Length: 226
Image 1 (tube, one colour):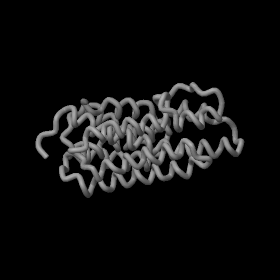
Image 2 (cartoon, helix red, strand yellow):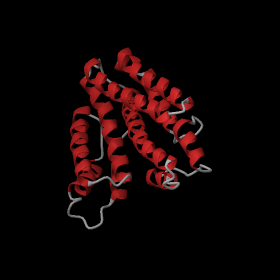
Image 3 (cartoon, rainbow, N blue to C red):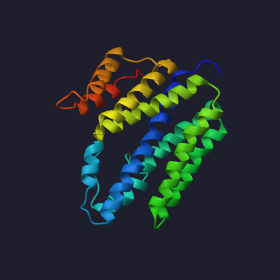
Image 4 (cartoon, rainbow, N blue to C red):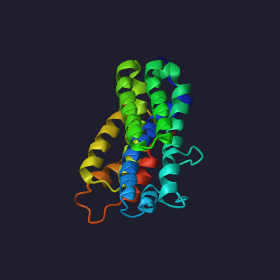
């Protein structure tokens, strides 16, 4: 593959981000869904607050249906998967039909989940297809730069979500090191000051009395110049 255009770079980056967003939020949504089915409170409000999305839902039943499967809700799992697919379909030549097919299978699985009496079982198939997408991308995408941009987006999104969810230092440090490697290999332009702040905040989490999760989110969101 030759020179990657700015538009292709942008789409590859957001393909990585949206696919990771779907994968991680399904896992969080599944726990929230189970808790509410077991009547452990209507914790969807906390869910919305953690992810900083508007709580537009009438009650837990409305949340369970719309957050998972409403394509009119821009924050829903389905909407984010559609965005991943929209980027992947345009990038068919760059990522290959085999790689694209797993995003298509994820779309098929989430549409089955939408009408299923056991939606979490079908959502597991969505997760499995996202995992297969990442794996097949490593095998079938010839361009190392293309692979690194997708994985860069994936790691950026994971740090962002982990910070919002206030996941601990060990996980964030691991993701930071992986993201840093992909950033350098991708050749994407970035703000050195944001990388320094992000690295300092995560590497010294164990020493901090008050962890600045908000600062981590702000730095990672401002890191890439795209």
